[in-house]
Image (cartoon, rainbow, N blue to C red; front, side, top):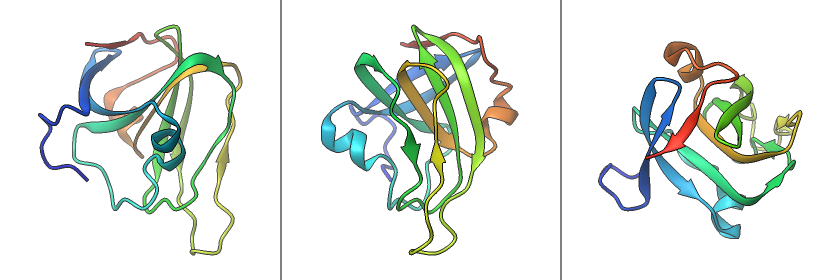
Length: 129
């Protein structure tokens, strides 16, 4: 977990009326690894998965150690939210899978509870600043 939010891997994302720093995952390795194996996220940060073409791949919680909220984004608009997705209960437990309802071009992962505390909802705009 990076401690320095000035890290060039972080960019500012405005979603709804909230701004947060996001780590960008946009290559095959980063998209596959995601947040697996990490202990948590620094307050006010998330991971933004960015795709060059709209896609409909599912996500899963393999190797996760903390619960997440998923925010699915298409054309800079929040199209779906999945809250409080739990990590596997044991290392051998089947990880939860999260399925999009529509094609998307970005997915934001944030700690569980962030969507509720930030009042994020479907239809909100999302913009990398």
